[in-house]
Image (cartoon, rainbow, N blue to C red; front, side, top):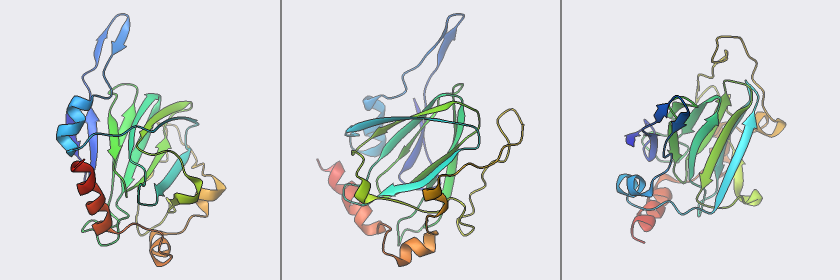
Length: 206
């Protein structure tokens, strides 16, 4: 497993070794033995999610209040998505910075989105299936979003499918109505960088 930290600190790309032959392929998409040395703590699994999306479907930018927030280990089981991590931690040196990883059924990459970061993705093929391993269960009262089309964040969302055909963005009403990053900060919804770092230090000490 190759591990690379993204431009947003505390988020990572994991690239597994895929073994293929005439029958198909096999790979280990999560290995705790690789995970702990890279982050300094184990991923405590409390929920596993799976979504299927049509091409152009944009989900996010989502995050959960800290503590406990919700870390996600994300992969694409079928199809292809552009997975995006956004630094929404107030006071962070990289506040507002985003990075992306292509997750698909070829290279089988995964992303790890730590607690306190924003997460979104856009499907590049119909019936793209994304699986998430989550550190905390879904808690509706603690779940929030930032508008993925916020020009101040400036995420460069693709306008074509993986095969080059044009596609339109499909957003839920909730995501389309989400506040901008500046509005979310003014409303006191965003996590503080120092609080997130203290929480991660606590995890490493367990």
